[in-house]
Length: 144
Image (cartoon, rainbow, N blue to C red; front, side, top):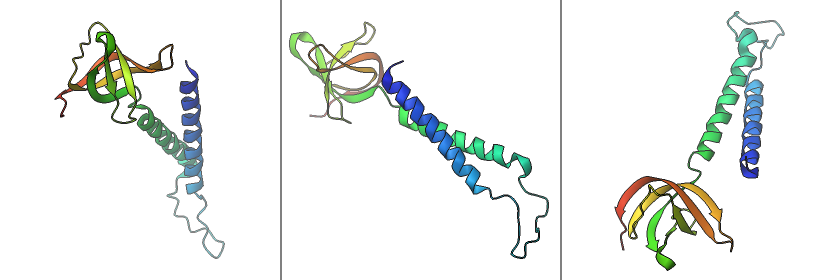
């Protein structure tokens, strides 16, 4: 597991814990009126209020982590020819140009707009490289 994944996991857990703490704060318990006497009708959350709050907090944390991590490793752009018969792609989101290393079952033709799933890395000279694992979507030819 690389360092970035560990940091993201720790942040996700911290977010879940903080969200559950906020949910605990929402439930005041009791039901005391202004005179100090109980006005509760017996229909409160009871002892399960803490469990409900924790469940809501954990669900919110998991949802936030999913939204942050679901598009990780996806780039979209137009495939362009590069030197030595290789291809490259400029990611529309971050405007970085990646040299593409496609697996044998993925064929990429210059002039096509595609969404690719894979892993962002760097080559020995520090240039960005995208190791293509699969073609997520082919949008057709690029508009010039």
